[in-house]
Length: 187
Length: 187
DNA sequence: AATAGGACCATACGATTCGGATCATACGTG
DNA sequence: CACGTATGATCCGAATCGTATGGTCCTATT
Image (cartoon, rainbow over all chains, first blue to last red; front, side, top):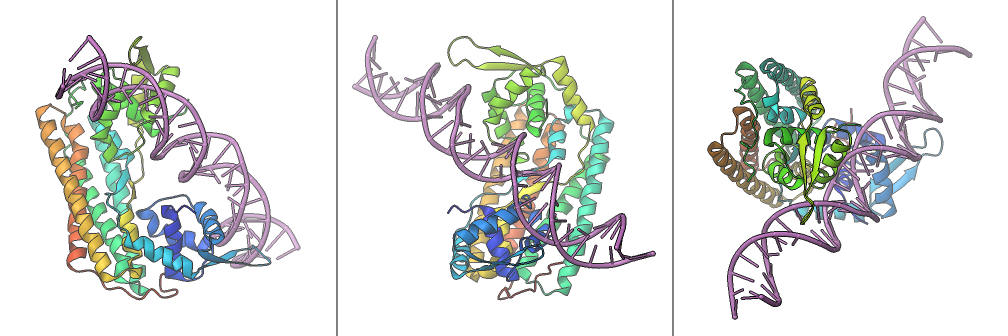
C-alpha cells in the first residue's frame, strides 16, 4: 500500500466529517481543500476503494438505488492519519499560474495586451476573494474550528497580495526590452 | 499538434534566449519559471522535439560528442508564441501545499506538533526568500527587463505573506476542537 | 599520461494521474 | 406522467510524471 496526498485527504476528511460517501467528500473538498491542494474528483471514488482494500477504511454498500458507498475510518486508518500528521513536510508550495507565465514572456506582448491581462487577473482574484468571504461567512455559522479556518485565512491573504500586484501592473505596466538574444542570465 | 503550457515555456524561453539546447532551457527554467510553473525537466527534452516536428522550431544536431540539439524559433514558432500571448487566461493560480493540508487537518494533531510544523514552514519560506534575493541580485547584473523581473516580485511578496502567516501560527497556535462528526459544513 | 571521481547532459519508459465523457438515478414541476 | 435539471458514480484513453540509467566531459592527483 502506497500513500499519496489524496490518501490523506480522504482519511482526513472522513475523520472530520464522520462516515461519508465519495460524493460528499467531493463537495467538502470543493470549497476548501481544492484551493490549496487541487486534484480531479474521480480520485475521490477510486482512492477510498483502495484505502478500504488496505483496511484503513470500512466500506458499506447501499443495496438499492445509486449503490452509494459509505466509508468510515477504521482504527488502522485513524492511526495512519495521525502518523502522517507527525511527519512534517519541508517544501514550500508549488504553484501554477498561467497569467504569471505570460507575464514572464510579456516582452513579446504589446503594452495594451499586458494591461488587459492584468485587469483580467484583478477581476479573477476579486471574484475569488468574494468566494472566500462567502465561505468564511458560512463557516462562522457552523462552528468550524479555528484550525480549519486557518487555511482559508492564508488563501485570503495570498489573494489579496495577488490583487495588489496585478493592480500595480495594470496601473503602471513595466517597460519591455525588445527581447534580445542572451540578456537573460543563463547561469 | 496540441499545445500545452510547456510548449509555450519552450517557445518563450527560446525566444528570450535565442538558440538553445534542452539543458540550457532546463537551467534557465530552474531559477525562474519553475517557481510559478513547475514541471519535470524531462519534458524539456521531449517537447522541443515535438515542436520541431510541427515546424515551430528548427533543430540542429551536434554530430559528435553529446549529440546536443540546438533549437531555434522559426517564423511559425514566433507567431504561435505571440498568438498565445494574445489569449489571456481567466483562472487564478492553482497551488499545492502539503503544510497547509496538514494545517487543515490539524485538529488531529497535538498542539506542539502544530507549532513545530509552523516553525519548520517559517524556515522553509525564509530560505526561499534568500533564494529570491540572490536571483534578484544576479538579475540586476544582467539587464533583465522589468517584465521578466515582475514574476519574481510577486513570488517574493507571496513568500513574505506565507512567512507572516506561519509566524503567527507558530506564535499563537489556534485552538483545536476535538474533531467531531459533522460540524464541518457539507453544503 | 593515466586514472578516478564528479559534474554535466540526455533519454527512455513504467507508473501514475488526469480529466472529461458518459451513464445512471433522483427529484421537482406543471 | 413526462420532461428537464441536479445529483451521483464510473470508466478509460491520454497526458504527465519522475526517476533510473547511461553516456560525456572536465580536472585534480599522482
